[in-house]
Length: 129
Image (cartoon, rainbow, N blue to C red):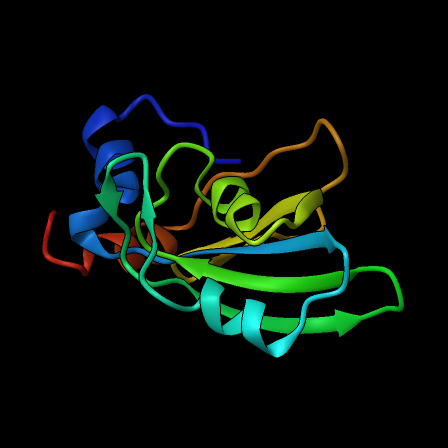
Protein backbone atom coordinates (compact mmCIF):
# COMPACT_ATOMS: atom_id res chain seq x y z
CA UNK A 1 0.00 0.00 0.00
CA UNK A 2 1.32 3.42 -0.89
CA UNK A 3 0.44 6.51 1.11
CA UNK A 4 1.19 9.97 -0.19
CA UNK A 5 0.02 13.53 0.25
CA UNK A 6 1.10 14.31 -3.32
CA UNK A 7 -2.12 14.00 -5.31
CA UNK A 8 -0.41 14.47 -8.67
CA UNK A 9 2.05 11.67 -7.90
CA UNK A 10 -0.77 9.32 -6.82
CA UNK A 11 -2.95 10.13 -9.84
CA UNK A 12 -0.09 9.57 -12.21
CA UNK A 13 0.68 6.15 -10.73
CA UNK A 14 -2.96 5.13 -11.06
CA UNK A 15 -3.85 6.71 -14.43
CA UNK A 16 -3.87 4.15 -17.27
CA UNK A 17 -2.30 6.54 -19.80
CA UNK A 18 1.03 6.17 -17.96
CA UNK A 19 0.91 2.38 -18.38
CA UNK A 20 2.39 1.68 -14.95
CA UNK A 21 1.94 -2.03 -14.41
CA UNK A 22 0.29 -3.50 -11.36
CA UNK A 23 0.93 -7.16 -10.57
CA UNK A 24 -1.34 -9.35 -8.47
CA UNK A 25 -1.32 -12.91 -7.11
CA UNK A 26 -4.86 -14.22 -7.41
CA UNK A 27 -6.18 -17.53 -6.09
CA UNK A 28 -9.28 -18.73 -7.94
CA UNK A 29 -11.56 -21.74 -7.96
CA UNK A 30 -12.14 -23.97 -9.80
CA UNK A 31 -8.95 -24.96 -11.60
CA UNK A 32 -8.14 -22.86 -14.71
CA UNK A 33 -7.89 -24.57 -18.10
CA UNK A 34 -6.19 -23.37 -21.33
CA UNK A 35 -9.38 -21.87 -22.74
CA UNK A 36 -10.05 -19.78 -19.63
CA UNK A 37 -6.42 -18.64 -19.52
CA UNK A 38 -6.62 -17.57 -23.18
CA UNK A 39 -9.84 -15.69 -22.43
CA UNK A 40 -8.31 -13.87 -19.47
CA UNK A 41 -5.45 -12.77 -21.73
CA UNK A 42 -7.79 -11.43 -24.41
CA UNK A 43 -9.31 -7.97 -24.66
CA UNK A 44 -12.44 -8.00 -22.54
CA UNK A 45 -15.48 -5.71 -22.52
CA UNK A 46 -16.46 -4.82 -18.94
CA UNK A 47 -18.79 -2.11 -17.65
CA UNK A 48 -19.31 -0.66 -21.09
CA UNK A 49 -15.70 -0.37 -22.18
CA UNK A 50 -12.93 -2.40 -23.74
CA UNK A 51 -10.09 -3.07 -21.34
CA UNK A 52 -6.45 -3.26 -22.30
CA UNK A 53 -5.52 -6.95 -22.35
CA UNK A 54 -4.05 -8.26 -19.13
CA UNK A 55 -1.09 -10.61 -18.99
CA UNK A 56 -2.24 -13.63 -17.01
CA UNK A 57 -0.09 -16.66 -16.28
CA UNK A 58 -0.49 -19.68 -14.06
CA UNK A 59 1.81 -19.47 -11.05
CA UNK A 60 0.72 -22.70 -9.39
CA UNK A 61 -1.97 -25.32 -9.90
CA UNK A 62 -3.76 -27.47 -7.37
CA UNK A 63 -6.52 -30.01 -7.82
CA UNK A 64 -9.25 -27.58 -6.81
CA UNK A 65 -7.74 -24.12 -7.36
CA UNK A 66 -5.20 -22.13 -9.34
CA UNK A 67 -2.90 -19.29 -8.37
CA UNK A 68 -2.64 -16.78 -11.21
CA UNK A 69 -0.25 -13.90 -11.84
CA UNK A 70 -2.15 -10.91 -13.28
CA UNK A 71 -0.33 -7.92 -14.75
CA UNK A 72 -2.60 -5.00 -15.67
CA UNK A 73 -2.08 -1.38 -16.62
CA UNK A 74 -5.59 0.02 -16.26
CA UNK A 75 -6.73 -0.98 -12.81
CA UNK A 76 -10.44 -0.31 -13.26
CA UNK A 77 -12.67 -0.74 -10.22
CA UNK A 78 -12.70 -4.45 -9.28
CA UNK A 79 -11.25 -5.25 -12.71
CA UNK A 80 -9.66 -8.59 -11.82
CA UNK A 81 -12.73 -9.82 -9.96
CA UNK A 82 -14.96 -8.87 -12.90
CA UNK A 83 -12.59 -10.54 -15.38
CA UNK A 84 -12.68 -13.74 -13.36
CA UNK A 85 -16.46 -13.57 -13.03
CA UNK A 86 -16.81 -13.67 -16.83
CA UNK A 87 -15.17 -17.11 -16.76
CA UNK A 88 -17.08 -18.38 -13.69
CA UNK A 89 -13.98 -18.16 -11.51
CA UNK A 90 -14.41 -17.30 -7.84
CA UNK A 91 -11.63 -15.13 -6.43
CA UNK A 92 -10.58 -16.59 -3.09
CA UNK A 93 -7.55 -14.36 -2.52
CA UNK A 94 -6.21 -11.29 -4.31
CA UNK A 95 -2.99 -9.55 -3.34
CA UNK A 96 -1.14 -6.75 -5.15
CA UNK A 97 2.54 -7.65 -5.13
CA UNK A 98 4.05 -4.99 -7.38
CA UNK A 99 3.40 -1.51 -8.79
CA UNK A 100 5.82 -0.55 -11.54
CA UNK A 101 9.28 -1.54 -10.27
CA UNK A 102 8.18 -1.35 -6.62
CA UNK A 103 7.72 -4.85 -5.16
CA UNK A 104 5.90 -5.77 -2.00
CA UNK A 105 8.51 -6.36 0.64
CA UNK A 106 8.59 -8.07 3.99
CA UNK A 107 7.57 -5.23 6.30
CA UNK A 108 5.85 -6.36 9.46
CA UNK A 109 2.17 -5.52 9.91
CA UNK A 110 1.80 -1.91 11.05
CA UNK A 111 5.28 -0.88 9.90
CA UNK A 112 6.14 1.48 7.05
CA UNK A 113 9.09 2.87 5.16
CA UNK A 114 9.67 5.83 2.89
CA UNK A 115 10.26 5.35 -0.82
CA UNK A 116 13.82 5.97 -1.87
CA UNK A 117 14.55 8.74 -4.34
CA UNK A 118 15.40 6.05 -6.89
CA UNK A 119 11.99 4.40 -6.38
CA UNK A 120 10.18 7.72 -6.84
CA UNK A 121 12.19 8.42 -9.99
CA UNK A 122 11.34 4.97 -11.39
CA UNK A 123 7.70 6.09 -11.46
CA UNK A 124 8.48 9.54 -12.85
CA UNK A 125 10.69 8.33 -15.69
CA UNK A 126 7.51 7.60 -17.61
CA UNK A 127 7.44 11.27 -18.66
CA UNK A 128 4.79 12.68 -16.33
CA UNK A 129 7.16 14.38 -13.88
